[in-house]
Length: 266
Ligand SMILES: Cc1cc2nc3c(=O)[nH]c(=O)nc-3n(C[C@H](O)[C@H](O)[C@H](O)COP(=O)(O)OP(=O)(O)OC[C@H]3O[C@@H](n4cnc5c(N)ncnc54)[C@H](O)[C@@H]3O)c2cc1C
Ligand code: FES
Image (cartoon, rainbow, N blue to C red):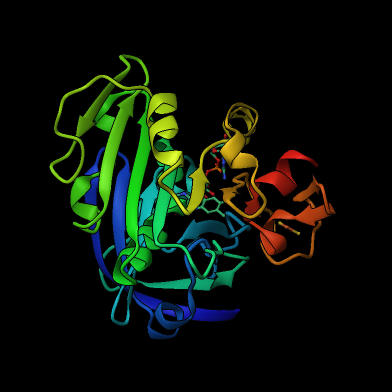
C-alpha cells in the first residue's frame, strides 16, 4: 500500500452520471491486482470535507495509466466527476485481497449485477491477456444501465440480461441469437463450462445462487465481492467486520473478495 499523487489525464462522461477517469499512476498500475481497490481523497486541497476517502476499483490498466469507472452517487463521487484534466488526485492503494484464480483455470465466468461490474473489469482484462476464455453475464434493470461494450476486451463474450423484460441481448461479441434467456438460465448453461466463477453481485443474490446451484458449492470454485461503504479502508476502524465460516473478517483487508462458500456458511 502506498500514497500516490496521480495526475488526471482524462475525464470522459460515458453516460449520465458515469465517468471514466484516466490517471498517470505508474507504480499503482504495476502493483494493482484485479479485485483490489484504492481509497481516493475526494476533497479540495487543504479541505477535510468530506473527511473520509472513498473506495474505487482500478477498472483497467494500460501501460503506466490506471482508469477508474466512476458512478456518481453522493458528495464524494460528484466532486470526483467534476475534476478537470491536469488535477492531481491523492490515492491510497492498492488495498485488499483480489480475485484468486486456480492456476489450472482456462475458462472464467463473470457475473455482475448492475454497477458491480466494476469489480470484475480488470479481471476480465487480465484474464483475456493471459489467454483465458472469459464470459461475462451482466444483469441490469434497464437497457441503458448496461456496460459500455467498448470498455470490454474484444475477446470477452458478453451477455446482457435486462431484468424488467427478461431479455438477453448480445453486444456484437456475444449472443447474437436474440434468444430470451434469464440470468438463471444463462448461469445454468455456463456453470458446467467454467473452471472458476467470480460474482460481482449483491450478497443476497450471491447467497441465493449458492443455494440454487450445486456447482457453486464446490470448494474454491466461486468467489464474490462484498461491497459496502468503507470508513478507513485500512483495517483500523473495524467497522467492516463480517462473519464468515472462518470467523470474523474485515472486508477492507481480508476482502473485498471472498470465497463464496466461506461467506455463505458464515
Ligand atoms: C471496495 C469498493 C470498491 C468500489 N469501487 C467503485 C468503483 O470502481 N466505481 C464506483 O463508481 N464506485 C465504487 N464503489 C462505490 C463508491 O465507493 C461509493 O459510491 C462512494 O464511496 C460513494 O461516495 P459519495 O460521497 O459519492 O456518496 P455518499 O454520500 O457517501 O453516499 C451516497 C449513497 O451511496 C451509498 N453507498 C456508498 N458506498 C456504497 C457502497 N459501497 N455500496 C452501496 N451503497 C453505497 C450510501 O449509503 C449513500 O446512500 C466501491 C465501493 C467499494 C466498497
Ligand atoms: S473500513 Fe475500517 S477496518 Fe475496514
